[in-house]
Amino acid sequence: MIQMDSKEYLDAKRKNMYIVIKLGFWSAAFTAVLAALFIFLGLFGSSYTESNPYPYIGSFIKTIDYMLFYPAFLLAPVFIVLLSCIYQYTHPARKIFSFIALLFGLIYAAIIIPDYFILWNVDLPSIISGQTANLSLISLYNPHGIFIALESLAYIMMSVSFLFLAPVFRGGRIEKALKWIFIIGFILVMGSFAFTSLMKYDIVVFEVGVITINVTVLIATGILMSILFRRAKNL
Image (cartoon, rainbow, N blue to C red; front, top):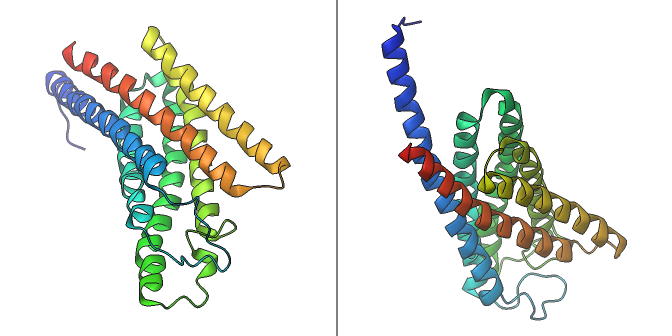
């Protein structure tokens, strides 16, 4: 290990913290933007309400049905960067919580990234080329398919990361707001899961619900965290 005197060490620590704060600000801002774009395209562009019966292979194709997942795909790595910055900036006494949040965030990203990638590179090309044999199970339009199941699982993992982020934030009004937004988001997701389980386990209803809840949380907290990082940068 290279030995540094105290002045060099402190300078290096300040430079590292400056990078963390700057990266934290931009990742928080991009998290809010990508989450807003995802929910906007989902609300105003999706054609999920149209009839598409078994075998759910997509008798019609609307580009928007697939394009709305691009911001969601980009959201995963940006969210991981944000969690990493939060971990680095967290007070040592609460660092274990931000570390666990980062781990659950990694699980979310590890599920959602290949899920969306397969959607674009297996599902969509197969439908366009007419090679739809055995495609039903991984189809975007299958309410009992692998795609929706994995997507739902990924966002459950994201909501668990919210729960562990909550104890990280203490202090002023923004910190308290962040804490309760994360807690309420987790409670709503778990409540939605329990509710839809009682309704003959409608996974599509849960999928829409959990995405709406989590994306709303990300928009609100992304804005608030960008403000916190901006303030830290100016100190």
